[in-house]
Image (cartoon, rainbow, N blue to C red; front, side, top):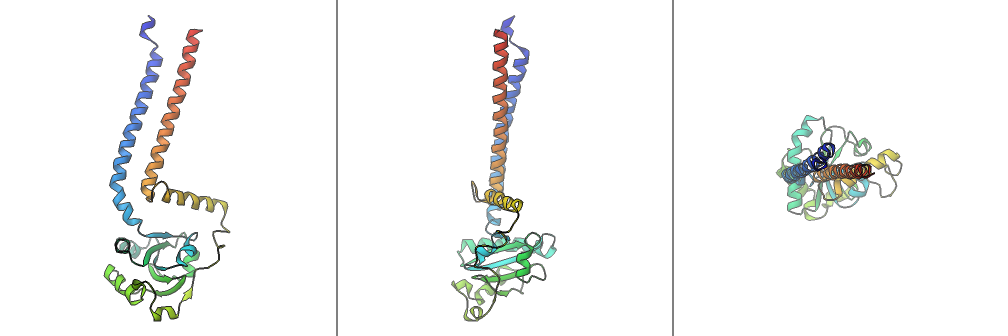
Length: 238
């Protein structure tokens, strides 16, 4: 009897419902995971990530305390949580110095320019000039005391620090980024987009783009199903 309907159509309809239900469950999971990782991500993002594409434009103005590191370095790995706490404190207390890091395995020219000979190297850069390197204990208090002795905690360099230093940041707008390959430029653009849109958290943005992609796939599946359903109905009518 025609009242029973088409079993094939019923199966496809069940498939669409299952896909939609799966997409909703996925979105719920994304929201939960995002809420869990957001605090940790926010802490790490207090550290400014400097690369060969943005180094000069950033450090040529203001005071910067920069960690030059390599991911494989065990000393760097031990320093990482302390560096995060330092960055959190700098942001919370609105210090006039920014806490940053440079991965020397991907930004080797910057590390060579800063004369990095060992990992980690912690350097104070003021208005594009290398003012000094830290050689004390790896502690938040030790870093703060040293930065105070350099005068940057008062919003400006001390007379001793201002007297010398090596210029390592170019004032020119052209540089490594201008001569980079198209692939590197596209990679940098995608990285910046992931890090800045729609939020300031790269981790949250990654979940957002993943969820949008899954919704697009499910939407396309439902759209195609409707087209096939209309064709089947047309064939039956004819």
